[in-house]
Amino acid sequence: MVRRLLCGAMLTLPLVTGAHLAAQTQLAAPEDARAATRYSVARLGQVPRGGDPQDPGHALYQEGYRLILLEKWGEARQKFDELLKKHPRSSYEDAARYWSAYALTHTQREKALTAYEQFVHQHASSAYYDDAVADMARLLRTAPDTSHMIVMSMNVRLLERQLRREARELSRLRIAAPVPPLARRFVEVEGVDEETLLRMEAVRALGDASDGEASFTMLRGIALDHSQPRPLRETAMESMVGFTNPGVVQVYVDIARKDTSEILRQIAVDYIGEAPIDKNQKVTVLIQLYKTTPRDRVEQREAIFYSIADVGNDAAVDFLSDVALTGQDYDLRRDAVYYLGSIGGERARSALTRILRPQ
Image (cartoon, rainbow, N blue to C red):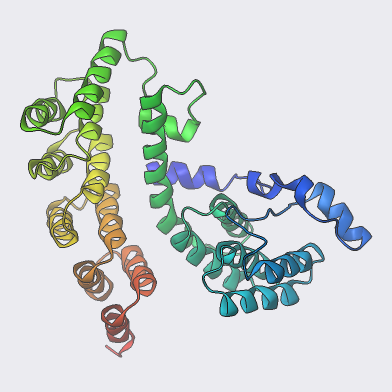
């Protein structure tokens, strides 16, 4: 349900997003009248954060972006390709990839979707990330079929996870600003009585003070106590994320397996993925959880699947290979193929080769 809500919301995102307008006064004026009109009323780019005039790719980026404004899509892509080949470590790398994908939207829709898909997977911290997601949504909204909905399904999980983190941080810091509607789905502090809010603050303070055995025992008791208010239990789970106590992961596993709250089960899966433990151990725990989670918990199984794929180590590759080759859920098999391609390496290539062999 969370995925469907987010996907529906994302498909209504406007074409012009904040990053396109942020540097309107900083850009050089275009060279012709049509471009000048676009400059003032249409989507606008920005010099990427971290961009440096001393960067070796600076001149190529500026030239490529000038060609974008002039709608010379093929020439612009050639400039950005040249930048990426000559200066792969340039601070303009993510900007060049974004605008190259944007140019493709005007010439080759299918390749544009693939380029955006790769961008959002590889550049989650880029200033252009939200723009790329919005552009993908626009392409999907106007697509003649739904063959590329997998692009959204694979990235909604990442957005969903990020929304949860940001919403928790907003609640924690008590920022005096309205929590975004999507984020509120995960916070839901509104309507919580003052006594519970006070106890939530105490739980946070306990987690901040120490990750010792006494703090862990107290927080574990609250997190596993079904009689406690859900916001309080969620706060206890959050407060244990950075604990080094090996029992923390087992708390999350118990909640993911047995809890009656779907929200807490989903959050528990996220926290297992964030736990400060060895990657092999993490994947082992997640795979076991995936195998023992009832098939009717579709959303939870998908959450576990994406957490495993996010780790991306050899054990994760082996798991993805098995899903791609023998899985019963066709959508997850496609997602597994995508992640194998994204992870790369000889192990992943070998798995993809086996998929391509005639059965």
